[in-house]
Image 1 (cartoon, rainbow, N blue to C red):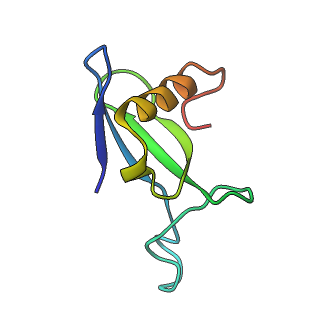
Image 2 (image 1 turned 90 degrees about the vertical axis):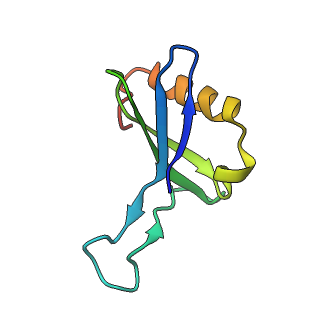
Length: 88
């Protein structure tokens, strides 16, 4: 289930973990894609309701419940303003 947050410009961002193995073997289907690195972060795609580009975030496990709306918006803003953002 996506998590939605609204920024100060009225854009609603819908964020969901990227999933690995959707067309692969049954054993890997439905497992959230872990980002590279030792701290077990997850790839999260946030899609805007407006004309802005989707962004890819790397967030810690449990982000859905532990990360505040403000924290999530801060991460979205940081990645949407970065050069080469929009999926990377």
